[in-house]
Length: 633
Image (tube, rainbow, N blue to C red):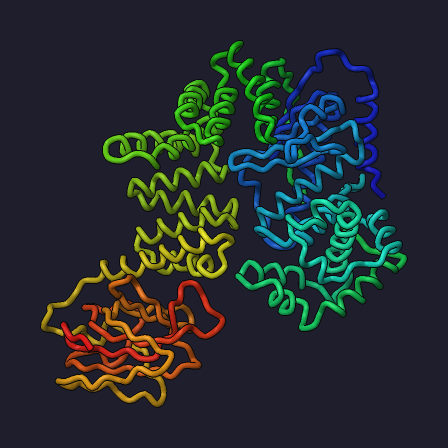
């Protein structure tokens, strides 16, 4: 069934069987989305580029969920000789990885796919497997390991027939054989595996079964029939929304679904036939347009090979190769930039900046060289202030805007340009650049935070809250959740500062706010000269502060009180009785959504939040009592 892949692999095997000269000739071809650098034959390298474009096009049509273009350029280094490839394999825990046919290296600015074409069919499967990991991450964000590996194996079977029909999801005989010969592990074990689990990292037999079971479950959920149609996508959507693994699984697949799924999966792998996905590829002339072959001399090839070595952790070998290039060609922009990035990754900013500047000067029309220098300048800003900060910021903005003009479709360049614009107070440019970066990589939480910062600065509270609210509760790291919470706090204060207070003697007209009706059974506020305070009951906490307003998000209401210890966020929870009392004349009849201007002195009483708790909620409100200025209980 995999005629196209086998035919292409056979061509590579034929080429690599011919004795090679001592110094291989390197060539480069460019397609719409890839740069392929190789020491194999011209014909086969061009075919490989066209085949990768077809696979990417198939993924755009077939991958569940929205998939966008790669946020950074992708370079494919295709080694025609196994012995050469072995010199460029990654090191894991100080040891060279053996039995590797290819690998994918994702970076902030550039992706590399390295493949050993001497391995034939296996090499092509490896390319597709590793590239799928990247596409899944870009489209869906981090996913459970079983989903990530299952999807990668599902899509690695890609082939295109001569009539233009693409086929994805062919059965993997070796996995079916393993699952039929061995007792299938409980589904609970599969769901618990992460990238640090011994099953995934150490146990060769267990890892083999894990891969087989992951592939089988993904294949069943995607091709097993209408009963499970859409459930994998629903499961991943729940996880992205902040749901925990157990609740997300039950919500997507049904309560007590594990036992049923285990039985269904056993039946599925024991059947005699499985279906694959077949469809006609959309015609994309740009993707089919592979440019002419460009010969590379030894030093030009060394730039790609040295940069690849640096990105797989073989830094000493990378540095030696790149320094040799600069000795022969001092104006080689990419070599200087690659050496500068090595120093930047090692936090050696003083060594990095001259090299990055050298690369940018030597390559004024090279977006990657300019973007690398921009990264170095942004790193320098962290240790500067005053005139030095302003000078570096202006230089960074100039460099990054030139890079954006040359390559608007590389997300990190656009995002850095937006970040520096925000630092410079140019919020319109900041928002535009960061929005564009997120269209290219919609799951990037750093870009979401920076866009939210720019929207806060622009006064677009609702726009900022659309990014911050999910990140506060479901950000992938504690640092992300904390920064999102800080930005929400800053947003509340900014909204207060932006409000124009009325004359002191006049209460705010009721028509300027839409009041929230008081809860059923709550007595109307009263005005008295001497407060008779509500008693604080067991389990309750009461603080003195100033009522700043109410954040309204959908049906949720969060009362914001500024205290000596900072902002206090109290949720109006349906399970709690709530009391609102005013002991001063002119106080609002009810608490309204939005800012309260002027802010009122209050006693805020609350209890520990009812589950599910959120990190942006300090407690559940029990009572808000507006008291006279200067009053202390």
